Image 1 (cartoon, rainbow, N blue to C red):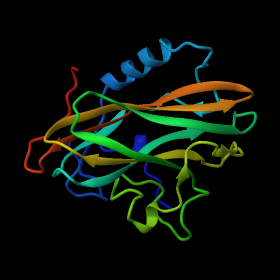
Image 2: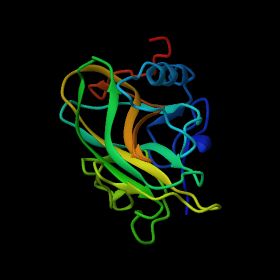
Image 3: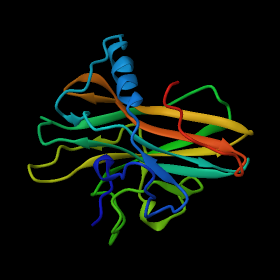
Image 4: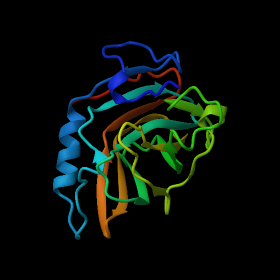
Length: 215
C-alpha cells in the first residue's frame, strides 16, 4: 500500500503523481502559525500530548478553479501514536480559513486509516478528488467527524486520522487555509490540535495562483 504523508511530499515544484496540475510545497510559516494558535487557546482545552504526532512539517498545495466547482481536499492527516493510553473520540474539525471569500466549506468527513480504506486500495491518502463526498473509489469510506472513535495502534503499526474537506468555489478571487483545527476527547479531557496543511484556491481557472508566505 502506498501511504502519502507529509514526509514524502517533494520540495520545490515537483508534481503530485495523483493530480498532475497541482504542485506540492513545504511552508515554514505554518509551523509558527500552529504554535501561535495552540498557545493562545483557553477554556480548559488541553494541547496534544504524545497520543498524536504533532511535530510534522507543514505542507500544502494550490490550484485555480472556476466558480461553481466542488472538490474534496483529502491530505489533511495526523498520526496516532502507540504512546496513546486509550482511545480518542473526535469532536469537531474546522479549516482555518482567511477572509478571501472565494470558497465555502460544504462538509467535513473523516477516516481512520488504513483500517477504513476501501478493500484492495493501494492509495493510503489522496490530495484532491472531484465533488463532495469525493467521487473517487479510493477516497470512499469516510464518515462524519463527530463521535468517531480512534483506537491507538500497536507498536509497529501505522494509524492516522484523515480529514476530507469539501469546498465549493463561490466567487472570483483567492481564498487560503492555514491549517485544520481538530478537537477531540482523550482520557476524559478535551484537546485541540492543528494539522499544518495549507491550501490556496483562486478563481477562475485561468487565474494565476501561488502560495503567499508572508501573510
